[in-house]
Image 1 (cartoon, rainbow, N blue to C red):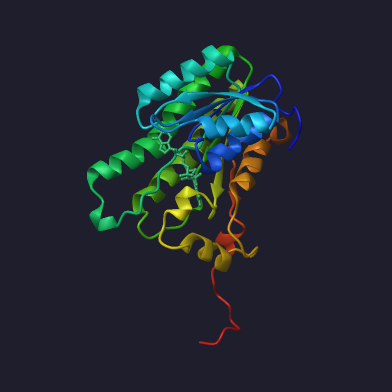
Image 2: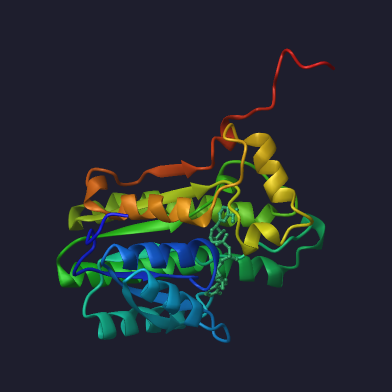
Length: 261
Ligand code: NAD
């Protein structure tokens, strides 16, 4: 925690009723940002609000299903109306249903694309226009995944959405630099949230314990601290980057020449 790191700034974070998004909203508020924290219609923002208050921060909920562009635009408008400005965006909301490749319907494909990728495009491009209008620059972090680089069973389309999020972030960094807006992407490995728990048993935890050189699954707060760094001026010369926060999982090719066959 860096106290008052974001004092006077307004941040919009999507998908904050649980997991990485909630930890991020709480972290940024605790560091002085006024946080607009997004929740899906039908899900209560109360728990996140309570945690923000406990962290000594300030924020307000913004309701939207990010899979619908008009709701994303409405959420941005509400953020600026209530917050007075827009400095930071964290595009975090996402879904990862367990879907066998040969049972994935076009409707499922479209929903994954809409929530994970199209929402990131609408949020970041429309948000950037607002930042440019305000004329003070800004910083954007998208939440991709190691699945942007490695395939995963029953996540065929999810992997494609996360690769899309990564490249979208890099391409946006290219065009937004002249406006003082940095765009970076975080690639989490296995993080202990509702999403990873939703897979059978505790596969995600076991997988992380086996694969990560650190021998454990990650916590949402460990992604939130990376988001905070990338948004902050400490990262002032970092844009278009992809930050792996995976406990080293991707470096483990599981080849050990000393192992018995
Ligand atoms: P999570 O399920 O706890 O959180 C996802 C959040 O997004 C929830 O608050 C949910 O309500 C919200 N959400 C889902 N659909 C939405 C919609 N249409 N509109 C608005 N909000 C919506 O899972 P998480 O692990 O915290 O996931 C956060 C992000 O991290 C996702 O983009 C996910 O792909 C990414 N990620 C997670 C892991 C992991 O191991 N947990 C690994 C890599 C990437």
